[in-house]
Length: 313
Image 1 (cartoon, helix red, strand yellow):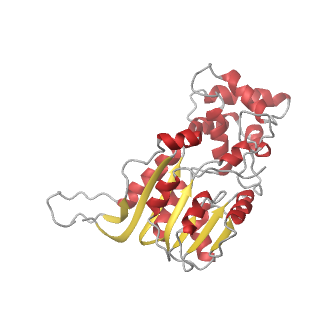
Image 2 (tube, rainbow, N blue to C red):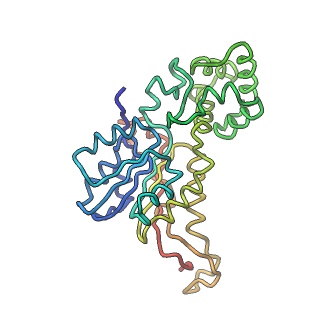
């Protein structure tokens, strides 16, 4: 299947990065290079783009979509390791970083990946197919209590205990091997609702656990901020509350909080700042974009600008 992913909040993200023509930019979740192509179009021959993705299919598509350019490097890796990745290629600081979090349209639609609860496919959900842990392992090997905990924590599913119990009962007869089998168990475990498919939250939770999407995120955001040159921008697009919460918390901590009276001309409380949050409220897709791409509905863009480490004011 062709790797397709419509870039969300494209113009807003490119504007948010405030691109310098000779700058160095990192797309930590390059996907099919939808955002990256717009970034590299704004770069001179002296500018450089680094694209990272844990999905090798995405990297193949990105390479093809950027084939007319030379000033880029693609790396198979995890954005959580961005500090180590840049160290290994000899780059200390960059002018901008983009993280477009979550699962791509391709990964949702590609049958063999097992991300979707809509069709009947093999349980997998690995963004990086070289890793061992898959959705099959979690659904069939995790103890009931642990399974319930991740469904509640990452899916914010109120019926997590009932779902976990019914999964464990079902797998006593035979392993749960397909997305349909899992979706059917979830559907029978929760009351009917008008809030979308009943398996949506459970599938989200298992996907997050498979790919370890939340636990390292706060530290990843802080690493990204520390890798920026003064004036550099970090743009992060999130798709659900858990991601957005971690990003918002990291941005707030990086900005710091001055406790001095507002009428003082300079800071005396000693609070340090790494930079400034550009948009206090997240940027969301407008009506025009939602008509073209319904998956942009939950997207939120937050932007942070690096400043010299110093006291506030």
